[in-house]
Image (cartoon, rainbow, N blue to C red; front, side, top):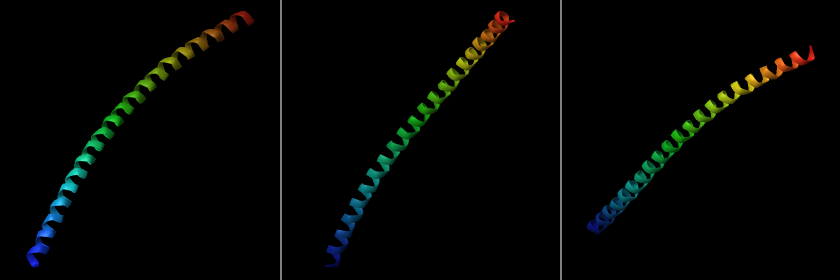
Length: 75
């Protein structure tokens, strides 16, 4: 009887260890995927900031030209 209970417990412990290993592996994969996505997002944000800066400068230059033309033709 004691041996039978001990064997059942040993089987349960083994099964729990397998489950834990599987979940740990899945967590590692999901963590790596999240880190990859975070890095991609950061690159995209950086690129968007650079584009915004570039176009803000162009808009400012065109705005200045427009103001100069208005001044030139209105005065």
